Length: 327
Image (cartoon, helix red, strand yellow):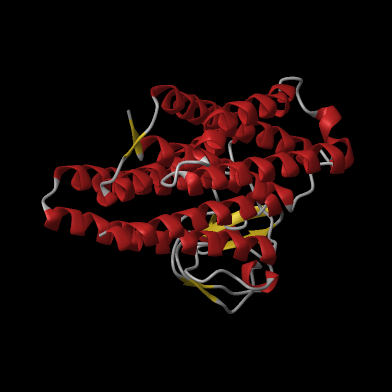
């Protein structure tokens, strides 16, 4: 069961990475519907496939873009004539996003495929936990399945709402919840805890709280960046366009570093926690460097997925360290 849990963790983390790349490239609406893409199981590879043509058999639910509008076929039919007629079509009612970019479409589609793939070990894990008849694994595996279903449903709402900002943050936090559940299950299956000082464990708990708050705050900053970019503000001028509260996210990094080092440095001497401490320090360094890239180089796109992945990693390593310890 532990091996399956590890596989599930890696795949879900890859989904987070894929989602970060979707955000980086602005591909979130590459597929305007869900779970299909332009009403197709396999996305279009050229604009011709989503343009109306005469003499083509269209299935119900297939989409085309005509007159700057996204149209949905209301029934199976054979098109005829040389001009688009709306007899067998209706405008897509859930949003009015009518653009096609083949790169965005396939990035979003691969993101969805990665998500679907990650569900396989999660389902296997659920059945293995049932077979084990152990209460904690059953609870954690069941909660993981429920969270995956919730995130999938939420992903549908995000697309149908044309990337409503707050829903994106909820989507990211929900993905983090899946990873936290898997980390908890992996730790439970290992079954070993190390005795540490109460003060040290308190610092770990505080670190976990502020790392989580910083991650949520960071998603809000990211949404503010998205809105600025949509307003055609150049990356070089992004900082000046951000709301004043974003400075709190930037400045909090020093408190986060200090609080983490309060337990990470002493833990370097603990054989059971040395790896956790080293990983934590490396993550803090990476977060600081990518943060500097944002402020000094105008929020370069390539640094965005790195920053969010490291933010997830910091929360998860804090959580793993906390539950692997006892007082």
